[in-house]
Amino acid sequence: MSKLDGKIAIVTGASKGIGAATAKALAAQGACVVVNYASSKSDADAVVAAITGAGGRAVAVQGDVSKANEAQGIVDAAINAYGRLDILVNNSGVYAFGPLETVNEADFHRMFNINVLGLLLVTRAAAAHMGEGASIINIGSGVTAITPPATSIYTASKGAVDAITGVLAKELGPRKIRVNSVNPSLTETQGTHSAGMLATDFEAGIIAQTPLGRLGQPQDIADVVAFVASDDARWLTGERIIAGGGLR
Image (cartoon, rainbow, N blue to C red; front, side, top):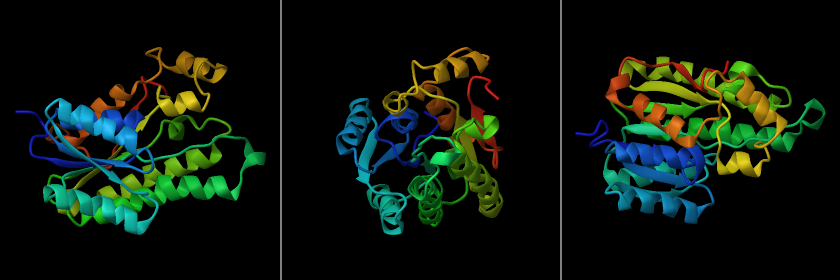
């Protein structure tokens, strides 16, 4: 028996990158997965096709996590499709970098609306359907441990994720719902490629500081999330798990 047999999971922002790898990893362990996407329907459909092609169960559901009605709609779709909810992975996130003099309201509100408010809105909707043994996993970031320059807004938003994880672990603990964060370091995804972060001095500097000597891959993070979602991690809550090859 696979470790997540019979479990129902939502992964937000699951059309590509870490989210897509996580959806596939949870499905490979037996979970039925709601693959949420904001705009990349074709990519989300491809993730669903990969899961169903391997014998798993998944549906793609559109929704902007930063809008309350759409966040609720993502959860409603999971309940309508599968009748329950056991795992929530809050993976949706955006980033933009720049020094202090480039800080602006648009970047601030975009990152905080999706990275922080979106997490809260989906979690609020999901928690109403979760019971003993459920697992909420927030995808944070290793930036909160290393606070690199030119990342003030993004690092602040992910610092909020760390704080929310601790708060909700205490708030939902009496209901036996676990809440943890998994914080990747720099990971090779379509997003980091398109952002121009790879094949640069920045990438070289990150690798040089990483004891295991390479960038993360989406599967590296997905496997950690699958563990935290499982009953093998039943005694973990309120934890910030840095999945970064030793980078601190």
